[in-house]
Image (cartoon, rainbow, N blue to C red; front, side, top):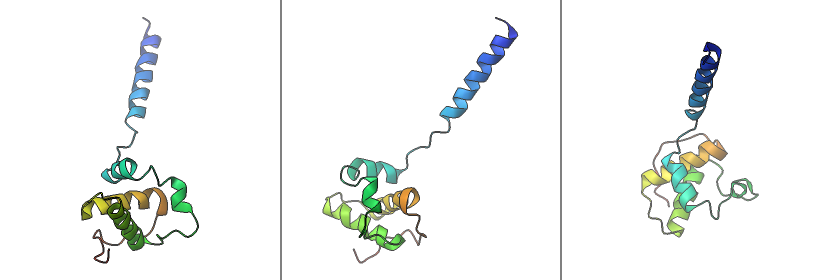
Length: 104
């Protein structure tokens, strides 16, 4: 092989490796949401008129409410992770502390 071909192959391989490293790892919140919620809750569900989540606390309350309705038995950390995932992916509300409100 000539040097030009070897250089091209090396650069192509390096480019492919750098692209593969850019794939983000799914968060726990994303995994929980896609496993348990996405069947009924499409992205449009979050943009509909009359939505019940209008800030971080109300979003967290809705996650807590619906996981209970579905009988998922998530703990506080799971609720916060799903809330964080939805907030980062869709809502972009200012985030308060990570605790789940006691008024579930």
